[in-house]
Image 1: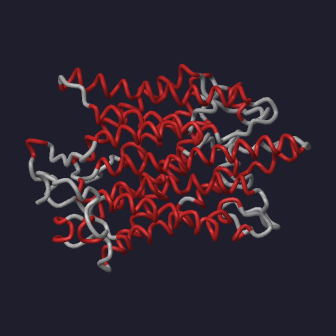
Image 2: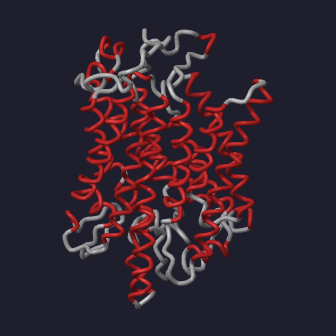
Image 3: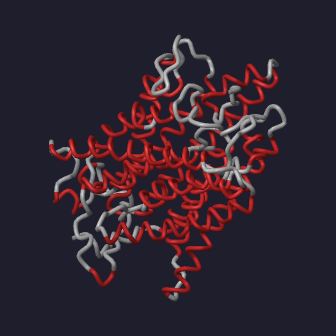
Length: 446
């Protein structure tokens, strides 16, 4: 079959073959770099959401953790991760890249900048599930594995020209901007971490109040969601270049991103009002993120009305997943598992249902796909490939996360001590409270 134009910046060396003109390459480089800046800014959103979601006695620790994870992720991705994702060699390997370690011989720096920010996002997603009771050594350990193996190898499968999922069927596995390798991987690793580290002390003991540990600052959470939403346009929009008249495709991706988020947020807003007789602000903002995750994989290949349907279903997926997590007594302070793992899974599957032939043609730069969305008469091949890819990538994240966190637990370096947890990690590990001029009153310090 004819080569497809790459779906992300990582494999866009094909652009040089399609457009033999420096101005096209410069245009794409500028756009990918701009998108890198936007994705980097998402780290601010994650930091604010996580800080607002924990108790005040752990605020400084969670912010420090985010700084460390970003720094380690980019460094080790430069050393090994990018080579395993997109490294070129004399022979194609469908499983893993085998060249350009330390970027030696690789000059497409804009591509590296974009993907280094993506892998940092996946790593940060997982870390939120372990907040308030995890040792820094554990964070550092899993971060190294995440940015060198857990994320890069599946990335090779779906976004490199020789990847086995990329070439499975026609048009192959479709993930516009990371619903699988960013969100499912981050959510699955976070889920295994939350299970292995156990619930925070005092959680799941007061059944009458659903054992909630409310975060100390909803304003921080809200501001973080808006920053993440802003950055999501770069995350999704950075999946393609601007050369060759593709601005219209980009505009549709941005519109789909907006509609997916707003429709999911409205689902959570209405569900709580109808069934519980009040508007739940925290659930609504989580619903917005659930919609953004759900739309990440299909945003480049669907119609705008389909993004509303996907967002609505994504809202219910999150609602059910969050309820199931609490029933199973799994303590995830930021609900990363139901938002990123389950909604990411739904988004990947939705491609096989809602992708249209003409949108695939535009997104893949004039590649005529033989299979497309089931609801548009495109058969079941694409849906089957999406299901297979989603299950394999989800299991990959669960397996690696389970091995890493179980090992850390067995050697006693996963969870902080009981007294340290009760006193708060800011006071015991980070030199003092984040709010030294305020008296912190919290009903869940015991």
